[in-house]
Picture 1 (tube, rainbow, N blue to C red):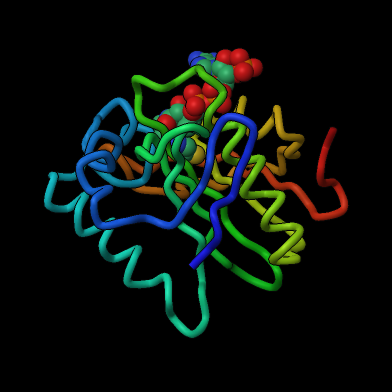
Picture 2 (cartoon, rainbow, N blue to C red):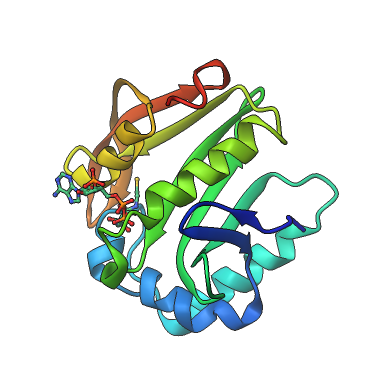
Length: 179
Ligand SMILES: CC(C)(COP(=O)(O)OP(=O)(O)OC[C@H]1O[C@@H](n2cnc3c(N)ncnc32)[C@H](O)[C@@H]1OP(=O)(O)O)[C@@H](O)C(=O)NCCC(=O)NCCS
């Protein structure tokens, strides 16, 4: 289990089984999933996603930190944030926020928190984020946090019935924190 990670306006914690309904508001919403690599999920699939993530927490070798984002002063899941280990001291970053919460700075705060954990406690070297070329909000998040644009991954994901490029961004341990 990860101890609660506190940012300025959000907290990150491991999932609980009772997060299923709140997770469905995110992964069942086309406004959110149209930017992700999977189609919108049913309430049952959202619950399974949460329960599967919980089942992976206590594995002997943790290969990801897939965490719930809550506001700093309550415990309700409003978003998700994940780093998945990939390569040597490296991880891939992903996140999603409930649409009614967009624009409040919650994701930027949560990603800042998980990056500090990743480069500090976990001593990772490199974190990448692969973002759709039209996903301007997500690109704004990583740019605010000092990521560098590396290039384009061609036909990187199959989503919304078609292949889609991704723009690859990265940040290195020695560059953190950017400000
Ligand atoms: C990407 C996402 C997680 C951002 O969540 P959020 O909590 O609204 O993010 P923040 O409020 O911390 O920051 C968003 C930034 O994007 C900017 N932004 C929003 N829409 C934008 C647009 N169309 N063009 C340019 N910038 C935009 C905001 O102005 C803000 O920047 P600012 O603080 O400088 O004003 C959210 O939009 C989301 O869930 N999208 C769908 C899922 C997704 O794309 N996940 C990432 C996959 S790579």
